[in-house]
Image (tube, rainbow, N blue to C red; front, top):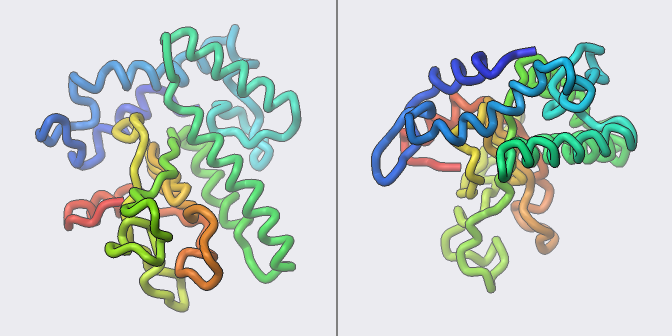
Length: 246
């Protein structure tokens, strides 16, 4: 499994696009060390033999040993261990362990993509696409976090009624090979230490973005059928430098 050191090296290679009190800083800035130490515990304890049963699992797609924060729950035992692991780590750091929402979102995508393919009766490959992404997520021991909230603008109005349509992530163009989206999402505290983002129409944390569609909308809305996609983080960094933010 990739280690805490591997993860920190990944963070160090990312562009500086994090701002603290108006200053652009590196992801491993001295003022970020508490957050790095907290998330780093998910790597450190996984390497301790006495905690292997709690913090590691066997991948259902490769059969390899992986960090449980990258695991798709296969049964009730997995669910209980995930909760026990989270509780144990939170007790060790005295607060939030930061990494749990990423794997919660990943498990949700696993379920929804599988069920969507069944509903579409073989005309889609959502689940297979997800498994391709998941293999890398597990092999690289990526950190995933969830930021599922659109900025929403005027809360009284529906997404399609917003004066500024970018208050919600939405489709602006459909092409033969995919879609073009635009909009703004808010992320959670762990974002600067994430390898990518899982967006419930947003998620943040390792090297990937998994955006999910916004809340139920009126039929025919531009957002109604968009559920999930993945974007390598380096692409979003280039985009953000142009002033477009997820």
